[in-house]
Length: 475
Ligand SMILES: Cc1ncc(COP(=O)(O)O)c(C=O)c1O
Image (cartoon, rainbow, N blue to C red; front, side):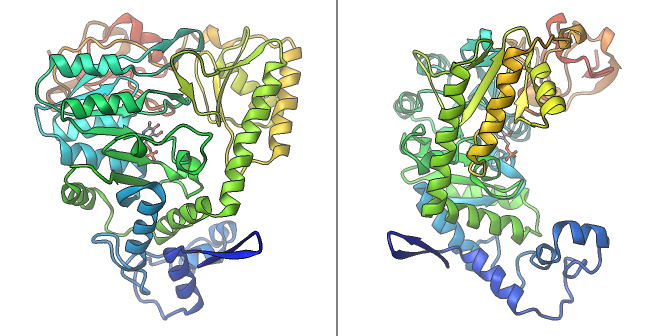
């Protein structure tokens, strides 16, 4: 139980896993079980010193110390998942280790079968692609708007979804990434109405949007707009530890929850980290607390401040909501005249010791996070002001390298058939005209350059500069 004070009233915010870990820490046992480092004694002392003895003491797995189990969910883990479901407005929430990737794989495995079709956006994350390879379902690609000036993918239109549903039978689900990595929002409400009309479930990959439920100035979360299931990478923006995420099933969803749970059991480790699970519990409790709400207000205010200051600059610009689409204000995508995104990133890193979320061809992405202070933002603004007035030159174009794949695929074979076909590895110089046998989707952003079954053309070459060899289907 976390005590927080609001208007002189003490509010109790429950965090059952955190509480159980605390109990276990305060009541140590003689430990003859995994993990074998036994409270950090069996590891490198430098490592123990670096991360802290306390962290290693609470590094345990389920089954022990009355901490409950993940599969099936019991004890404090079950209770924490129920509290999360309530906080996010879901019928059921599953805690995920191995990130939203695990949630996406479970969705594909439990909702689709070999040969069925999935309508999805081409800029989906590679975990969606892996899900399709596992289940054997085939993608019907939606090509979102391209924001060419910014070198990024934009929103998916409801019309394009309806057009696909009209022309294809055997569609098992519509699977939309929302928002995009750079924060561009699609009209999920309209897409959901269309999906209901065609009686097809709508899954929204909201990996980057777990905060939307906690502040009305952010876009409306898909669970409130009719989506059947949603993944959230709490570790990306919600304050939990790396790798921890959630999968939510909507209140009125007809999705078979048991099937999803069975798939998750197959995919998950049998030794879940209580630290990661506890961090999900803690992140949810923090977001629900007045303190967390304030942190989110500050993140939004910081983003507004950054955007206002960029508006005063001559050569630096930020992606603003425009006619036809919205953006998540906390994701600030910027570009500078005459500099590529990668060059701007390296200037910030080398000259100013600033690391941003990601950079691509035209711009870079700054996240205004829960943990950032106004002083952090002021420093960033000061550095951008210096860059705006300096005469940095670009050198990245000399590499002739591209980072944000925005090509329309030419599909020659089904994804799964290609993945399981005989393959060979050939020098890249001989790859044009051959059929790819591998997933090439570098992270970030994890968007596909090439998938198994797709024709390799000369347009792919700038995205493959770092590859000497490519895996192709044997002729
Ligand atoms: C849109 C999208 N979905 C899913 C994922 C996978 O998330 P995780 O890293 O939590 O496995 C990512 C990761 O970047 C992503 O960008």
